[in-house]
Image (cartoon, rainbow, N blue to C red):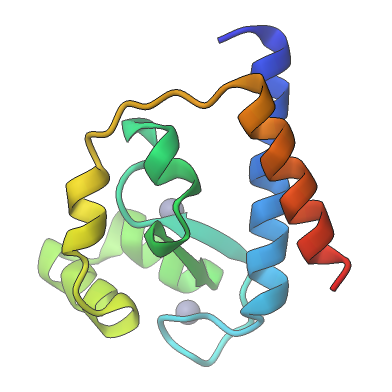
Length: 119
Ligand SMILES: [Zn+2]
Ligand SMILES: [Zn+2]
């Protein structure tokens, strides 16, 4: 990935995460603590599609986020996903999609998320 594209991806992600934190001020998992972070249910390393797919994202507090990454068993994680997202097979189906976003895709996303933040 070119330096420019990497920067655009980072910027797009920051904006999207900010949108999600604003729109979902309370953790979607415990429904108690304020949202501080955004979690990728399917690993973000899998590709651009799941990285930016909102069905794959959860607004979480630091405690639940640590749960996902360190404390919870696979069954507990599965439960948290079903509780917040319902049937998740749609996302499972795109997790191997290796489509690469272009510079103009990122620019379009940045414009869209920026617009969303001003609403
Ligand atoms: Zn929480
Ligand atoms: Zn995470």
